[in-house]
Image (cartoon, rainbow, N blue to C red):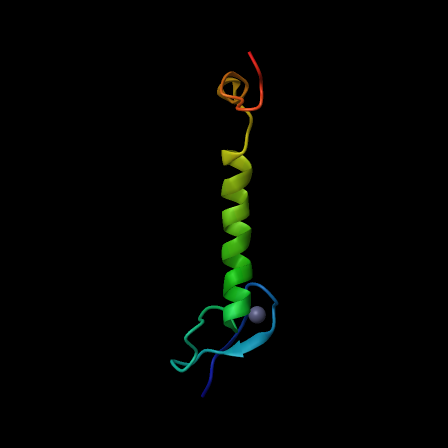
Length: 62
Ligand SMILES: [Zn+2]
């Protein structure tokens, strides 16, 4: 008896087996897509412009 579940990234039904090293994803690609989505979310926070960005602008001449 096999238990199936949808891949969190592509929703493709998968069989939950110990042979699938990308659980809970169906493949490395889907794992990386999910990881990338998480990373880009973090980046959007990190890229928020602060007052320091203006004070430390390397392109501004004095
Ligand atoms: Zn997938």
